[in-house]
Length: 230
Image (cartoon, rainbow, N blue to C red):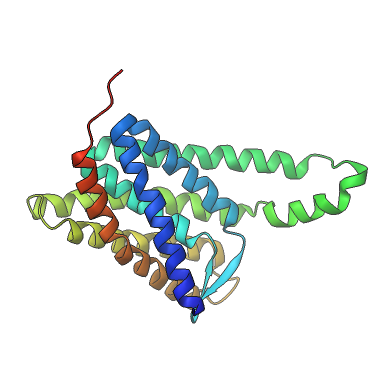
């Protein structure tokens, strides 16, 4: 099996696991899917430091997990509305702040004498770069809120029809906004940003297209689920 095929399988597996949070949220309460959103944002920021290849493109290892957050906001928008989708966005943002503070403390805490080598490795992997952190947080807030706005804009224009259109159209533009803001703030003047812009956006667009069958299936499945009562 080719490397590209393996990566596509990883994308599909991640989207499947992520979309199932909609079922859990429908059965046990929307708080569960909001919590998954926060977890995805934290995970994405932890693993973003590893740069990987996707065919001819170079992207952060977090690209699959982070792109999945747009599937979460689309599921929330479709089944719960703007209010709950925005709650999830802010929950993810707050979780990211907690992560930044926790990592800052851990990195600056004096290491035990017998663990200096491990501490250096830890710091090199998880050390916070202020400019990149700022870029990530600004891009996240703007792009996620745009995704919610665009999803409902398309839903109103199509009178609730064509779920595939609002899912892809809203995510397509939102991912462009996210990529443009993040790459520009984080890397402008440091490296050539054009290849980074193209690479990240193309990969995110591929994921956006692949997640469409999942939102259809999960939407259908959620309609079959009875809400659990206490």
